[in-house]
Image (tube, rainbow, N blue to C red; front, side, top):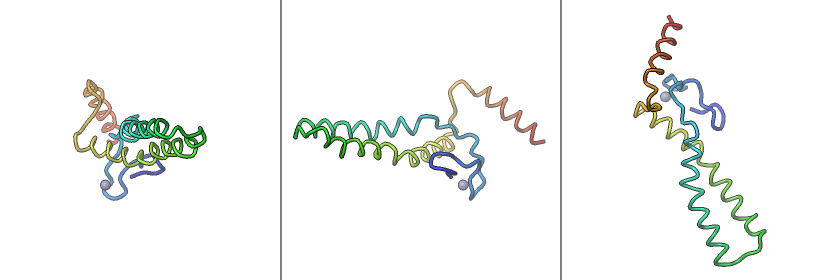
Length: 111
Ligand SMILES: [Zn+2]
């Protein structure tokens, strides 16, 4: 489904589903922050309060943990969001007419 790390293919290589509907925007980053960064921040604060380690301990543990923890799930979250968008026929609220126009224009071009 991905051409590059977070870049979608134009269509599914298996079933040729057109991915032009897919626009998760900053959704993956948002979910990554909520699911990973927020709990990890509590861990970092706990580490500081419980052990009062020198600053370099955070450079070795907290910074890589946060970076990897936030970046690693992005592709999975984006795949999940695109799939949900397809299953729920989701689109931005109030843009139904715009999508109708765009789809009509694309259909006319294809003819
Ligand atoms: Zn497919």
